[in-house]
Image (tube, rainbow, N blue to C red):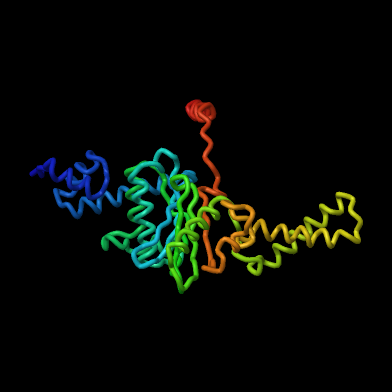
Length: 303
């Protein structure tokens, strides 16, 4: 005897899974109206659909950053295939959900995060959510990286630039979390977004980096025809300039280039660490070539 599936059941399943109406109806028919089995059915189909998309390039997406009610800060990059999807409310909500999960569950890395039970649903892992989202949205979705800060003495501040193109998180050490210090930290996060420092202070710069920089600068000076006896002094002078380019505290403050970031802070707070993520940096971008795609399809048809 055929099971009758109501529109209300289909609607409920769609709301609980995000799958399409016809997929929900088919799942309920296959599972004889059992809602839990239908959810599992769609999850299995969703994961299978996600696997088919695993080879696609996902270099769009967004970087999100926030501080939770316990003062724990997170910055995370989640990728998709197109900026159209990245700008949807659903994708943005997914990114924030993942950031909240990292804040609450403290995974050590992305692989551990994916295997964890999602903090807001004990019946699903984070990987399950990605599979479901991939299936319903129709694009490959992946968590690329994240950082999590728990302040030891002070607070964490975050900033998201241009709707998710750049995300910054900074940990500040201070005994007085005043409005003035909060304003400084906010200015600092925007400075980091704009100036892109690599280190907080010069003693963090690896020796290998300095040796390589000295080698390059030495060769530059020699190529300029400078006498060998003054090259060393020139190189050391340029190393000082290098420090001012890559070390946050020594950079000219973007809102007042006449002072350094350290001078801007004026001893009222210290920078413990920071993270700056730029969406898609280092990833291969997808290049659509319609003519090439058509030619490839025609070649297949001739075989």
